[in-house]
Image 1 (tube, helix red, strand yellow):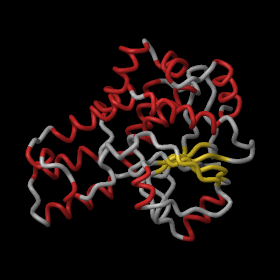
Image 2: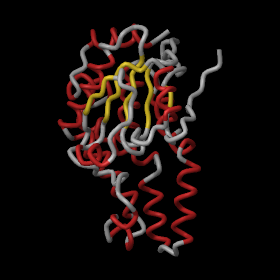
Image 3: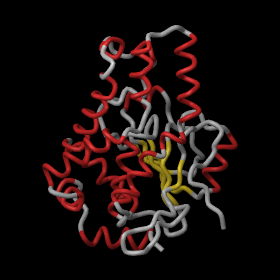
Image 4: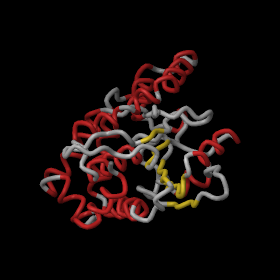
Length: 262
């Protein structure tokens, strides 16, 4: 049976299945069990039917309260909804309009990349974020055997991307393969971002602003590396981060691997 990595819904850009990735010990992440996405506030009836087909039990919303209020998820009634913000506010700037971006992003050509690197650094030093990651794993451990789970933010690339990276690593997927999943956002968002760039050029926005806007909507290796550097410096390795900061026990990891690996 063929499986789709990037699932084409009408009103999302970055809805993906985390299945199919090999682990370092020769197992494979199960298809159709863990899904990641960008915002779900404009799902069509057809999209909602697709979520029903994917037998999603729980939708974990990683956005801030402000983002949720502005654009609440549109879900089939039977899907459990869980608000679990990684940050208290959207520090990624994914939810901001172009006009809402800071003056620095209009004048400093490096501001977008520097901002995102700082976001990832802060995400990995924040106990609030670690607690939110813990809550994701807690939900993964309670999903019914015949159901699946979904987590998302606004763009589906930073809060969602880091959550997916940690999940894959906890399941025994190598750092290199987990990084490839992180960077796949750039393929999923390519058409969306190309369209936004064209609109900005047509509106004669400054090139510095366009470049920084692109940086905010890109999954860049340097962003992930900023997070991995924090993990290395403060915890030694990913396993120590998952146990010490996130509170994932050896038994938890064994149970996760039983649930989500073939």
